[in-house]
Image (cartoon, rainbow, N blue to C red; front, side, top):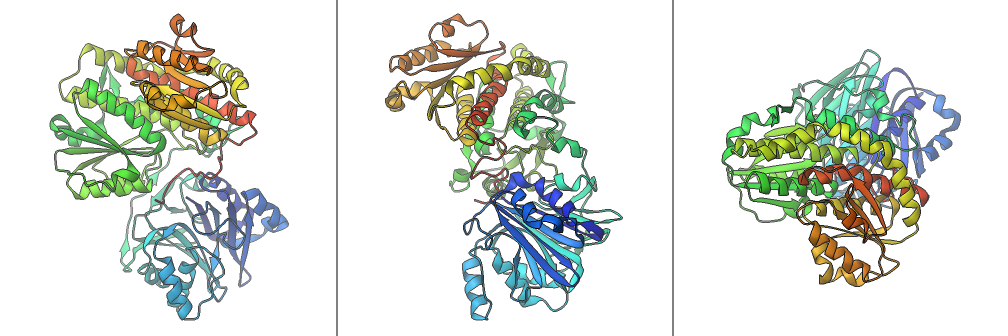
Length: 608
């Protein structure tokens, strides 16, 4: 969960490398560093904290011309955040530097072996063993030295390496962690994702596990670990560089929430016609979708919450039994799969380590894998039988907002497509699909008023230290997602429960200092949820409700409420999303926190 960027070419400035690194700060921000070659010397600069601290340390040096450089922003896994543990790491000679994203699982054994050979280690990181291993194999060819060193590594990695004796080459490699490379007439570029590259190029290579890339001025060559030259397809990126900037909003999170109407348009474009869903990406496995008896959903975090909505919809409208697992548990379960099993893997980044390993296991046992992801060329998309892209554009804020809305939209469309294939395309299903098609306009209306509404509500509740979210049916995933958003950016302890579970323990927590956020749309379970709200009021807990507009039954029994447009029952998680996100956003800001960069979290979880 770190960011890597590199440049090699005829003439660049250090500040260009730093600008690229800042576009990756969402991947990690407890330390950063840079390595570049100048006049035959390897120069290393590091700083604890955000990239601004490194920029301050660099000062006028930022204007230096450099022919080659690599940089890194870190989210610590081994060793505390410190200047010593920050990347890049060097070998004993001081001529070689490496940056790394991932975890080297056998670093303890490798370190002991290298120390017996006389290597001296300075940090507590797993990454440093890579530098010393490459040093062991270096005899003038950096490419060969990296290839040979990779044979000894176990775990996940994306690395970039420079050497004083090879001042016009960067060698990069990946296994399990993303890495993107590309070139134009001026130079060659690499990064953990495409965002830093958009200033220079639009056609990129997503290098694959086991690939080693050699970057030189204006050229990229890709090899396998055994030295075999391979070709990878170029992928054209349509995102503009401006799409990764704040666009006048104070935070990326707020900007991305206000992008949700367009995100929904992107998700439904070409996928809805005359009340029917068309998912061209799934046509190749349509026969299996018609006959399958087993659907397994695998996801983590916010993606898991979207998966819960998908599960309930499939059960209700396609008469399918659907299981769902958090990926970190799924990969260790002894589940029987066969060719009749469909596994739906949901991952915003397409690189989520637990989800990736889970689908690899399921695939090896004969299951058919459908990936739902936002990142073209990501590992999960490449290792699946079919992939449906969110088309949400880059999401910079760590907390998922627009990608959650996109996931809900795409998953509802996939579920309706499966229901149609299985002969369940009735009028109710067509109505839901038509409502989804009109959702961009509904979201525009929601966002016209919801920001001010949620800001006022946040003023009432930002200084509480506990919150409980409750919901039933389709409301339960919204409760989970609302609680997750609040806890991850405002650091308020927020838990979520099925409303019917209150009396089985959680209600013991409630008092006047422990408010409740009730998800209570006008659905088939509303009466039950109203009873649960009354139970919380009897414990003197304040209640905020998010309910259907004009619902007086809710208004009479709660302290505060947010009203959402009336929609079909499965679509309430969708229309409630911006309100829950904005409430958490304003609470975080009022508590003095940066919602874009919550502590201890990173955007893409690429380690277990």
